[in-house]
Length: 510
Image (cartoon, rainbow, N blue to C red; front, side):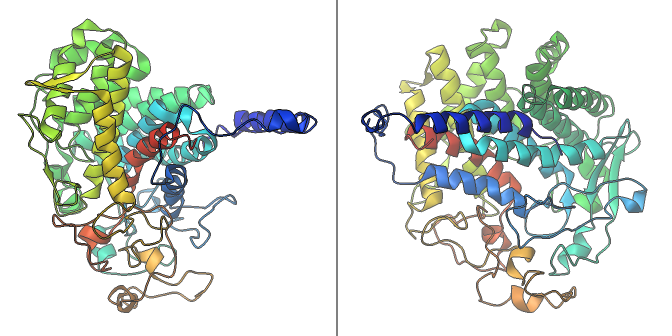
């Protein structure tokens, strides 16, 4: 797997030597106060602990041969013959949520967002940086396998219908591990362009610590984006029976093309991609008024990402993206003339019933990231007569994360394993069934449903998993069968990693 451990090991050795030498320094020197004078504010949450757990969660979602360093030890090897049905190696990657299917579209978006988190805030992560990079590397190794053949991407392993008719551990799964692909004849521009974005973003993560691997990633990203752009068509059409209703693309593929081009522009600095954005931006939806950002719709993310080129790098040709990004902010912040966003009585951003927390985490990330860009450029957002400062954006993001971590009417953390009270019956097969260590015998396909329907707490704690969250009235029943509210997903956690890093640092916890 891709690693930056060699440089990390050297750093760790240097720190060890420094601490050894420091032990000879007089106690008077060591008596210097350890508090952070520049972080005087009180934090109601341990953001550093939440950050560590949000990254650890990804180890519980791993498919394939698990390494000896695996920290969520109740998980074991699974899916070791994935790809065999099509004569390819598709072992590895992540299960997207609480089932045992590997969906390429959300996996790629998860990778992009984990990478963006590290790109913007990795310098603040300290001890968690290596864990974050390993989480990204686990995904990119799989995406490289899925894109090994030119003009072809293997976008799914496992038949979702069959998988969902069983409630079994990934280590036991015996449902068909069918393999589905997109190619010239059956295009899937959304997933292809998102995969290109993921590879490009990840190439920036590994550029310094593993330059040869970074070059492999960006070379593949260029090829995959060319395929996405040349052979246009929605994968929800060509593979409708397979991907719908699970990960149907409703927003079309234009947003992914703009998003993919934006990441290739950032990763390569090749003027080809800047020209592409300038030429195609409007037709690809740069000025769309939608304000939802997630695994399906990338318009807002592309606007924020491209705004950096104008705000920070002073690229005047992309000045419109500052306006596009500002329009998004004005639609989101309460009290502005253009505000459209809905919030629960307890203050949580509410987009939809199904897995609403994914929009909370993605939006919070965009807020702290845009605040970073605005601060660098010494600019603000103007919404009619209302001025929105970077500080305001950070405060809104903090309030959302604090709600997620327990500052809500139920006083419940929606991150498993964080805080005194958190969901006990998450919609997750591996977490809800006895572990292989405690129950070595195979649990058959239908046998697990008695557990799924029970009120007993999950025996295996999936530390760091963030569930879909409460409804529009701040209610959360904690029912395992309620996948809309109780199912965690990789794309909920991925953007949260960046936001938690910023908060932990800003309160002197990192």
